[in-house]
Length: 305
Image 1 (tube, rainbow, N blue to C red):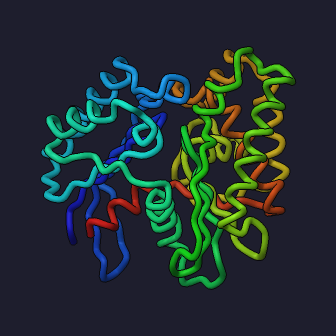
Image 2 (cartoon, one colour):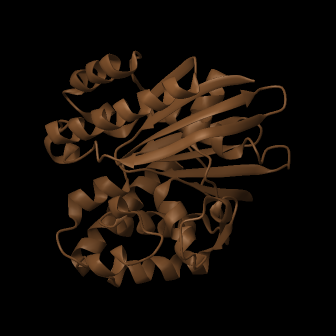
Image 3 (cartoon, one colour):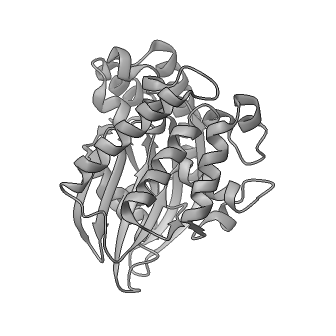
């Protein structure tokens, strides 16, 4: 077993996984898995820069994670930064702050690298069953589409995410018809772009990742509390996704916040996330989505093992 620590810093959240990995058996044993909403991508789409308060929130989480990594004695650490830090003019401030706290530089990876990690994390438990997978990772700033079987055959990252689309178009609560139309248009354009590289139709298992997808699954399953074990590898039908997306579109902020499984940091962006997943299922024609709690974070951990 190799004890590893992986950090995934995205547009909306920063997450830590400390685990013992056994490459021989393909087993990844969680020791500590946690998530903090820091909204690093706050206003990046509009300003092109990381906001000082967003950096402050992110560095505070990094300090907590550094203590956990030390306590567990993990010797190998990889910090991967995704969409928001790729887009920001002042990403050097982010890089130097992380280096000071954790002793490693964040790797500001490309969208294609992000897709590779996501695919590995999502399918390592599924591969060997035959067939191909279409993995869709709906993040805060971008969404990754990856097709493959035992290995990735095609991948594309496009700039639609629940935070980016919300900040770009949504000004009312609930969103107006005009705002909904604008979000849908951006999603449609992005799916056209993704389809240039990744086949979105065909006989493949659709696997959905990240907080928007797992939250929608928790709502569809009628859970009273967020239960990762019930959500992981659950199968949510296209009809259930459409129903949840429709209810979220018409709900107010207070009504969304009152949903038992809703994380406070997702209340304002879950509508756009649900719209992306609904549009993906319509475009692919998938009858269901397999929901995975294992994603890019697990892929990062395996890259260390």
